[in-house]
Image 1: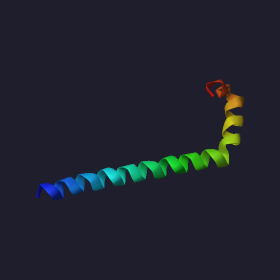
Image 2: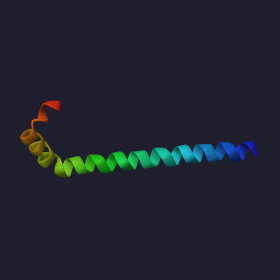
Image 3: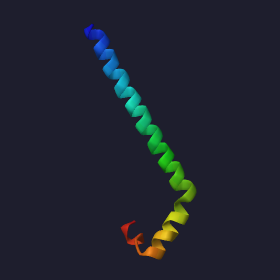
Image 4: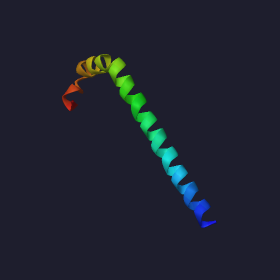
Length: 51
């Protein structure tokens, strides 16, 4: 029983890490595809100094 609980904990941690990596990858891909437009709109609103 203790082994089953430990396995479930590691599986949940691995799934969480996998989902976080996927979300990070999607955000990075979105930035690569739309980064110039995002930056141009930030220049127009005066927020480009943050970068």
